Structure formats: C-alpha cells, structure tokens
Length: 329
Image (cartoon, rainbow, N blue to C red; front, top):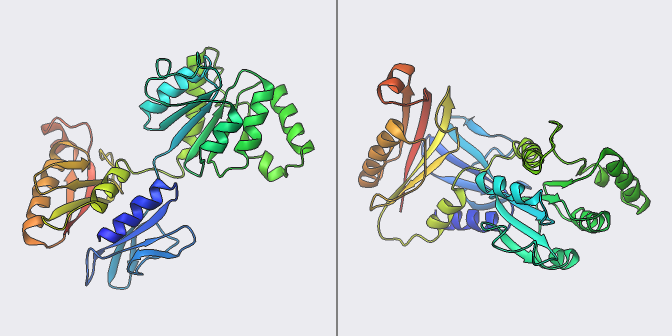
C-alpha cells in the first residue's frame, strides 16, 4: 500500500493524473491498482476497468475507480491591474498561483502575497518553469509583443488552458499571425481569446471573475479531489508502526456535503487529513474509522442524511452517502 501511495504522490507532483481502482466489495476488499494515462499498471494489483469511473461491477467484485488529478496551477504572465484580482481569486479557489513579470515593481510578494513570484523576462520564465497538463495559463502582459512571446511558448507546453487578454479584433489578428508562423489549426484552437466568459465585464475585478469562470468551466472535466496530494504524501511517508484508516466516499446522491471521491485520512492519534463533509456524517465516519483501526476489517457504510436528520443536526445538506473505510498499515 505504501508503494502505491508513493506512486500516487510522485505522479501528482509531476503533473500526471492517475486512475486509482480499489475493491470495496468482494473477496479482498481494500486491494488496489494504480494506472497511468495510457492504461499501464503503475503499482498495486491489476484489478481495474480502465475506461470507467465510479462504482464498477466486475463479476462478484465491486470496485471504486477515480481519476486523481494534481492540484491545478494558475500561471499569470503579466503583473498588471488585471493580474492582481485573478491571483486573489485563484488562491481562493485552491490553485497554486505563480505570477511572472520582468518588472520588479509589478512582480513582488507585496503585490502578490500568496503567489510564487518569477521576476524575469518571459522567455527565461518558460525555460526555468516546467509547465504541464495541470497548469492554466493566463497571459495579460503589457503589450502585444510580450503576449505573443508568451503565447508561442505556452503552445509548446501541455497546459490545460491558455487564455490571452485582448479585443475580438486583436484575437483575430493573433490567430492569423499564429497561422502565418506555421502553427497548425489544432494548436491555434487551443487559445481562449478574448479571454474569459462574456459577462460584459468592465473593471479589473469583473474581468478577473470572467477569466476564472472560464477556467472553472474548463477544469470541471478534471475535478481535483480536495487534499489528495496531502493524503498521498502522508501515506507515502507513513512509518509501519501504527494503523491508520482511510475513508472514501464511493457513492453520493442528493445534496451531500461532499461528493464521491472525497477522502479523509484518520491517523492513530485522531489527527485527520481531508474531509468527508463535516458534521454528523463525519463524526460517525470517524467513529467507524477508529473501529476499523482496531479490528483491521474494512467496512462499507451507508449514511442516509434526510432533511429531518439534517435539520435536527443543524446541517444544510441531506442525501445519501456510501463510505468505504479501510485500515492502512
């Protein structure tokens, strides 16, 4: 199990998604297999159904399968007036934010207190910073020349999103220019410009909302389980002394506080990483997790959080959740 979670941790750090398949019902609940994008087995046992997500039946066995995506990175080229609210919203949404500008007065920690700062020219930034499929690139530099420099370099990466600020006319001219440079149409079509959703945004803050709204829309096809990198790192570094428990929501219907795939790691001292929703459901899950540590027997539990129970507990959510709880040695 430690080798499997080490592989998860290493893949996520390198920006590569992985498919985790875990048996939740059958002869050997708890056994798992980890697969790369090409379907190759990276760690564990070869038990998965590579093209499927969620609960999967395989004869008398039931698997829970989930693509684990790395924490998204938001990379902003240009530190001007639009970049400031974009970075703030990015941090609020859980992105790892990086801001690059070749001017120290625009790229500094006072202006962007929660971002990584690259104070260098844009070509140098691309040379020093490895961008991959976990990154969402926002190009808002001070001029067309710098925009085009960043855009050409960005198109040479596997970035999940590339957006460039500008008017419809500027966007059309930019696309024509890219074609003149010999870039294929498939590459040109990767570019979002004018950047952002069309919400008649005017102020820098409104433009930032439109940009991040578009990024959220694009990111929705690759949801990132909260705290998955922290959980994977903790499990990869775990000493083989005391048992822990890992709780996974394998099914969720209705207005549940967390959806399928949310995980919470419970350590022997009661410390936790991640959440399965808080409140009554999480308290009951915690109690069950401590029992699993003692018995070393996996459990599959269903919680029915109907409106009456939710109201009695002061909760705003209801619905049904099925949790799989497994011991981790």
